[in-house]
Amino acid sequence: MATVLLLRHGRTTANADGGLAGRRPVELDDTGRAQAAAVGERLKAVPLAAVVTSPLIRCRQTLELALPSAEPHPEEGLIECGYGEWEGQPLKKLAKHPLWPVVQQHPSAAVFPGGEAMADMAARAVAAVRAWDARVTAEHGPHAIWLACSHGDVIKAIVADALGVHLDLFQRIVADPASLTAISYTPTRPFLLRLNDTGGDLAGLVPPKGRRARRPKAAASDAAVGGGAGGR
Image (cartoon, rainbow, N blue to C red; front, top):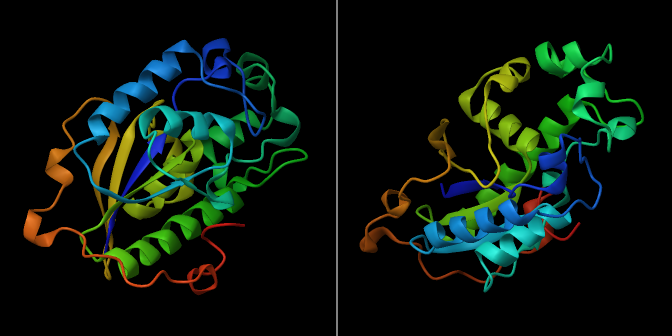
């Protein structure tokens, strides 16, 4: 199967201010823009068969700076968790909420007021990535590499699934702004190749020339991919 690079967006104004952005149209700050440009330099060594993104502006801005020639496919399954009434509030304030210990210690049971269950977020994110991975493999071959730009909790949930650990352990995983995480899905199990990589050489992920992605077949229809991919 193909290899997916999970890219977290660069730092935002909410990250800098200690607030919970959620699905609000929060943009990158100066640091985040510099991070996006830097990760773009690292990605020049990697031939990407496809680029997929959360539709939120901070992810789209990250890709515009990192991969200006790419044409990202928006994917609703990779959108940030719906934090409901928590969105826009300071994390210091939220840490005093009775739900906070549940989110930290038993996230599979956490349902945000007026928002989404963390378990539902994890399920739709994993389904989206696995569907896109199958699509890229079918169109470009098993040695293809593709990229998905998303959010911290979403990436952590995908990593937890790849490691075969319960969602209640996902808070032990770190995905920093502009970090890259690499997962290779196989017919038997996923392999976590990189985690929270913020400065390593990516050339080692590129297969030898004889095993590079083949020329794409006729594009598969979105309907063939199922509910987890593309244009929703």
